[in-house]
Image (cartoon, rainbow, N blue to C red; front, side):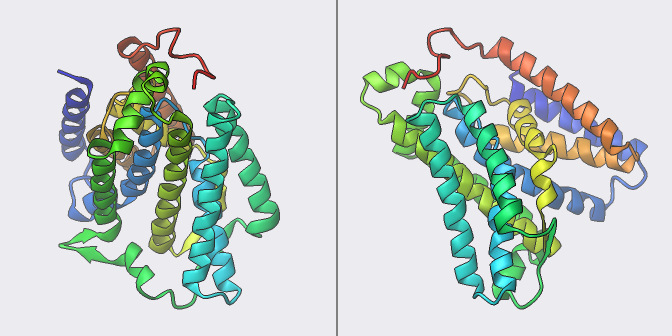
Amino acid sequence: MNQEQMVLAISGALFVIFSVTLDSFFQVSNLVSLLQNVSMLGILAIGMAGVVIGRGIDLTMVAVMVFSTGWSFVLFSGGMQIELALLLGLLLALAIGTVTGILVAYVEIPDIFATLAMATVITGLGRFALVPSDNIFISGDVGWLASLGTGSVAALPMPVVLFLVVACAAFVGLRLTRYGAFVYAIGDNPMASRNSGIPIRPIKVLMYSSSAFIAFCAGLIMAMTVSSVNTKLASSTMIYDIILVVVIGGIGLAGGKGSVRNVLSGTLLIGLLLNGMTIMNISYSAQNIIKSLILLLAIIVDSVLNPRDEQTSQQGDI
């Protein structure tokens, strides 16, 4: 039994246990709410997975999500057309992703430090110059965009449908394109990839730009779902939830392994766990402790199953 199958088995066991022991769990309204709530986490995890498979990590995703979309709706509330406001927000997200990629690929700063520093810069600059308050409430006519958060398809909430669409697009991009083949090759062995002529530096930049694009899309869907943008999320533990989904789903931090299916299985397990803990009225602090322990255990298991060899784990080998 591989890790993905094990995660699915644990998810099935949790579903049965929660259905039997928690009165309000096995209800259509709760299950639909579970899927809708976890879809945002799943979309962000897909963006993170594309970077992790290429032997990187992106700690800027949540900051990019809240401040790029938040800025868009600040501009909209100031009288700008919604299409232009969203375009500017998207360009901001892509610019941040590109700068992050350049720092990692060309300046050769280790990705964990480059993205951590960029997340801090984005948060500080966002609070100072882009988004004036902790909550941006969306008022006014946003047209068809409202359906991204409140619409449904065949009884499935639109965020869940969009999660599946993003998952399918990511599967095609990673498995059926030259870009995806390059990402897997770089994650598996950067030096061999360089020697074979793969343009490692541009691909790295594209990885982080793609991650920022997905973060913006997730932020837009979340904003339409709750009719607001909460910038406090940039300082929350959400980024660790994203990493938890990726790692526990079976995508190796050593790079070169994993797929969108791993993200789907990890999202399902974490969604069930979070929903169950919420119904049991476990405090937010206790939930964070439990999630942290699970993340630590998942990283230990990953380091055993997918060890980095000394040669290919070096930074600056691209």
